[in-house]
Image 1: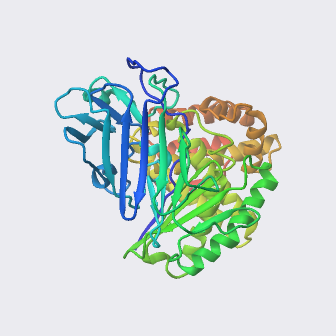
Image 2 (image 1 turned 30 degrees about the horizontal axis):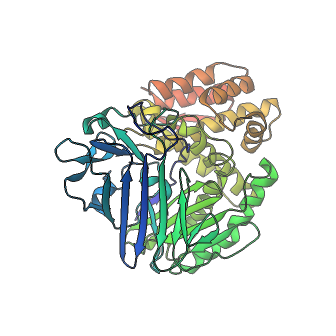
Image 3 (image 1 turned 135 degrees about the horizontal axis):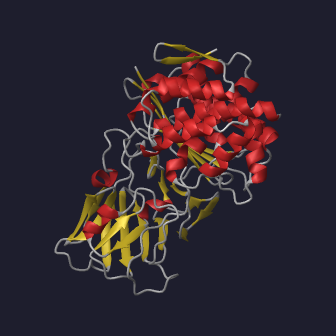
Length: 472
């Protein structure tokens, strides 16, 4: 049986693109978009403000399975003379003859489940027909030519884009939609960074979190989410301080008992956790799957303190800070809440994952290789080294380190320089930083040797067995 444990990487909400000529005022909408569900039919109507031959979609990550472009399978352009193509790293609307696109473009949409590479799922599909749509999937980048999409960088964080925002409206012909915990007849927003829920279900209210859970989700999974989520969030709040924002909502969809699969995919946005569970492997509770589910909940909940509305990374290539850091937060939380939890085995799995991926090239380029798991495995291992070194200066564990970062980072951005400088201060030795920087920027010709050297410098107890580093 294939076991897939996925957590979508948390992205900084400010997405932009390179400078382009424009006629509209800087704050005027680049486009107005109307998303409508009418029974089984979904339409997306674009009213474009600028005469351009092409527009790229900012959110254009590939599907994790098969690295496919998901829009090609789910979106059909109905406007004559307009094509939806893949150029470079981006999905692009382009005119057939290179002239300006029509100002009105209609797309027929078919929402479907499926996880993306280090990005938010465009849609969560529930077995009762309900659908939740990610707001940012409709945002555009104006282009002076379709070919210019090939020059767009993979990471748009901090890159200035003229042209104004994309203003999107969502409406369901059958009734109000749910947006940020409130029912509304229609929603209009720009850069909402949220999910809009189309469906009749109401969130189950609880003190710590409200939840919309797929009615077909196996009962033991629903019970585990209900029981464990508030416990782990209370633990984080006690150790890390109160989370910011209002009471969060949890949305959980069920993609069915697919044969040979145990899949848990999820991500966190401000005040929102979304999860999609799938596979015959989670139909029945077993010790291994039960521990995996609890770890998954703990990882996603950790992002409320590291990676969502609190501490965020600066650039996408720094995802190891929040993903690996949340892995270690989850491991430490589970160990605190369950004396029988085997934290060493979980940490060893992170070491093994880092060893298997760090030799393939620079870790900062792992996303381009489709190896996003390097951010998780190596990030957790480096956090373990930081935690061990920090004990010398009085920090109890990794939660203590993160709590200190939360106190010190007044802009809520935890940059690579912030992280590595704090590591050097905690260890009193520049060697750990040098090793991590080399693995990040150059890759590793000898991953076991590099991790062993890092552990020795930081004080992590370990042994080297052939090409494997084994934690004591």
